Amino acid sequence: MTRPNTAADSDQLTFQNPVTRYSTVEPPIQHQPEPGLDAELEPKADHGESSYRGTGRLNGRKALITGGDSGIGAAVAIAFAREGADVALNYLPDEHADADRIREIIEREGRTAVLLPGDLTDKALCASVVSDAVDALGGLDILVNNAGKQVVAPSLEELPDEQLTDTYAVNILAMFRITKAALAHLTPGSTIINTTSIEAYQPAPNLLDYASAKAAINNFTKGLAQQLATKGIRVNAVAPGPIWTPLQVSDGQEKEDLPKFDQVSPMGRAGQPTELAPAYVFFTSSESSYVIGETLHVNGGMPTP
Ligand code: NAD
Ligand code: MG
Image (cartoon, rainbow, N blue to C red; front, side):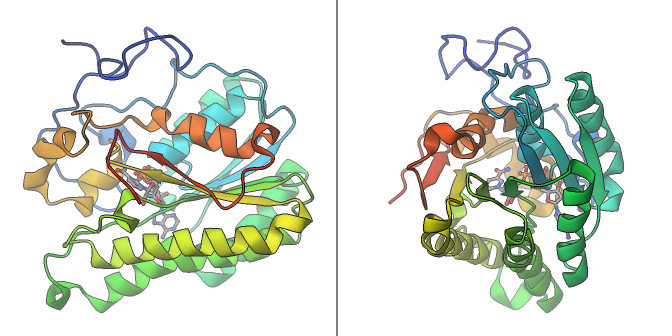
């Protein structure tokens, strides 16, 4: 069945066949320098621009989302704004065009969008991005640690030390640093959601640095969740499977593996970024008040422990 890749004809609450909600992506071989841009992704991904319907579940909330310019983070930003939240986005300065597009969509909803570019490998930036978000939004009660670096290396011998350090700096050290800085501002009812990965459970042999950092995120999430439970701050994680985002075409996969990207999950198609958004909304909203230290898998049926 052929359908457009972006499901502008239905929203996430429409009863529909999940298999045909989106067509297969069938990615052509392509390459972008790191970090990739959604603007140049072929075919385009669905971030919920016209397919995410809000229901007021996050009215008045204030969110900081790292990696909020593109992919999953952008879809979460749009969903949060449609649910009534104001949003601050962190991303790399080179990604300004993507971030600016998401800002426009959020402002069209009548919500505030704050752009806070900066490199999370910089320790000081991890603290300042939090204080800048707090100043601009007038507080903070949602933190989404979503930024991630994924670059393939065929063997351990070919994994450059600089890549290893950067992957750990972005994927896990920044998560510790940003969360630590945010704790000074988060009040009871606040929520923290960390983006982990199927790679934490099924590590690809060419993603040793990425996959092991994702496993660390799972462990961090479950430990911190217990530490903060009595403070009324809930910590949970979302574990995406194969999702069509710029991460994949900027060395997140071997170029020649891209055409097989749809076949990774049992459903037989890649996921779209907006299909992740309801998981983040659920963990963020007070409806999940007794859900702590949990990981929600959004992966088209890939088995997890
Ligand atoms: P994406 O490229 O759209 O988002 C990743 C973002 O990370 C970038 O937009 C960038 O802003 C940010 N980032 C990277 N390095 C940074 C740095 N040094 N400083 C600041 N920001 C930096 O891709 P995505 O797939 O939406 O990725 C979002 C999250 O989802 C990542 O944590 C990724 O590991 C995770 N994930 C993705 C998939 C997938 O299949 N796409 C699967 C599992 C997990
Ligand atoms: Mg990006």
